[in-house]
Length: 98
Length: 129
Image 1 (cartoon, helix red, strand yellow):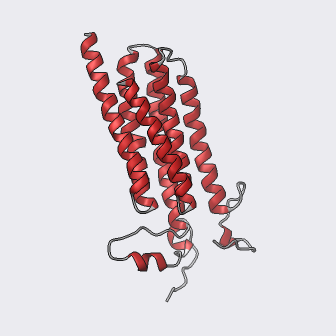
Image 2 (cartoon, each protein chain N blue to C red):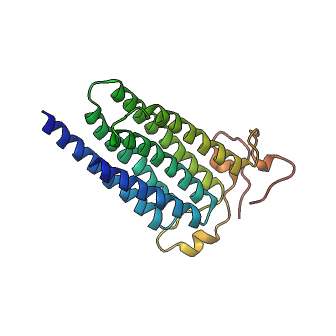
Image 3 (tube, each protein chain N blue to C red):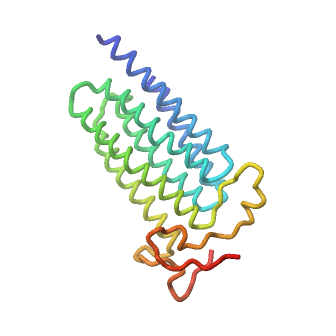
C-alpha cells in the first residue's frame, strides 16, 4: 500500500506540472507550484517508510515551511510587483496595469 | 496486533491516495482557477492528513510519529492559508469564477474596485456606472 501511495503521489506531481505548463493565468501556475510542494512533502514522508529509513521527516518539515513561504512570496510579487512593498500598485504614482 | 495495525495503515493510506488522485484529476480538468483551488485544497487537507495518519500507524509510538504529527499540523495550517491567499490574489487580480450561464459576462467583467475588496481600506468607492 505504501508503493501505491508513492505511485499516486508521483502521478499527482506530474499532473501538477502539466497544470503549471498549461495554466492560462499566473494563479494557475502558482496553484500548481503550491500543489507540487505539498506533494513533495508527502513523497518525502512516504519514501522514508518505503525504504525503511524514516529519517527524512526533518526534510519534510523544512520543505513544508519553505514551500509555504515560497508561495506567499510569489503571490506578493505577482500582486504588488515588488517584494518589499506594502502599498497597492494603484496607490503608487506609476500604476502598473494588468 | 500487527495484522490490525497493517490493515488500519493500509486503509488510511488507500483513502489518502484516493483523495490525492482525485485532487490531481480535479486540478487538471476543472474549468477555472477557483474550482481548481477547491480540488487542491482537498488534497492538502484530506489527502495529506489520511496519508500521514496511515504512516503514523507504521511508525508506532516513537519520535517518528511526533514528526509526522508536526508535518500534519504544518500542512494543515499553511496549505489553508496558501489556498486562501491564491484565491484572494486571483480575485483581486481580476479573475472571475466561471458561473453557469454567465460565461461571457463573467469573462468580460472588469476588475473590481480594490477598495471594495480590501475591507480594511476606507477609501471612498467611486460609482462604477
